[in-house]
Length: 443
Picture (tube, rainbow, N blue to C red):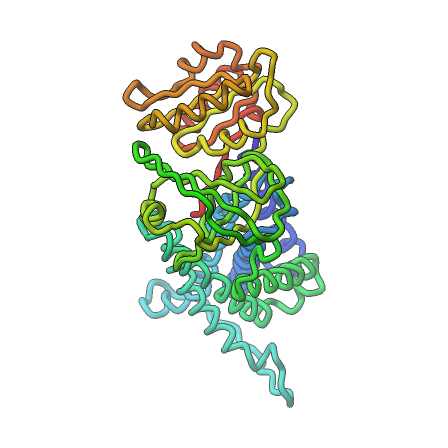
């Protein structure tokens, strides 16, 4: 259901912009005249590229009012990625259409019709749309080359995350250059047509978002400051529990939400799920799995008393819904939101309505024992499965929870693992809207 909604929003964004652009065309924009048709397509691909990039830039500043309709920050980061790829695709088409005639002429591929002569504008005085046209064209071309490099780095999974974060910040500067390019070169007749007000609004809001990014103001009103009070390392499964005492106001959080955490080191803030329930006492705990270069060094680099900045909370992975019967599935470090969920549950004297499955490569006895004890206190059935005993499949879930079709499924873990469970569940009758999955990926 969540992915379907995102796909619908994504498709609606493209079709909406394309439709407004088509409504803004002059009669005869598409004719057998090569040069007029080419100009129409150059403008159209430019409008689509800029419009989609604008929406992506706006989403990048983490506007919390989009979280509820889109299902959480993790969901609209996925939308942000799709918008970025599609914006670059239209930008590439725009560039090819713009440069194509020169290539055709240079390589003598075939004969182009004569280019129609244009009456030179010799009016006196400075005209921004005339006199800055060449500069805007050059800036747009070089901005496209930089954009191509940044998109390639963002999609290259082997490119280190810390360098990806730094390079991705350049997107805001590239966007501002493209605002200038679009404003100067867009067909002046568009401003009075249906596409005009929409592009103007996207330019204004997108420019504000880009400036927020450049001046590091993203999430500034959602930050709290504190210090590390405790560090617990579970060596066997390489999991680190970091406890924090906040010293400034924190608005509270729901179980399953996450925050961006800056441990006052050279790295930028990283997103981690909050594994503690909110008790209105300023205490937070993050359970962090050693998965990459940064998280593997945290156990050695952190110390009690170290300053911390926490930004959030974000996310809508909150176990809410109409179905009282729930099945929670945590894969690896994906168990973290369920730990917070257990802590937030009241003690139950009635039979369990929740089953919690924890599937991991290696089961740490002490770490797992603490989850099991908490589950027993809250009346939740808990199953820990190690990878060596076989992967968690729907058949194994069905053997332990035969009524799974009547449950809401909450999954957090590797995306491939989630898909391997989601697809057969839906095929066997689970409504897609009852499978809730954390989709958080920063790239």
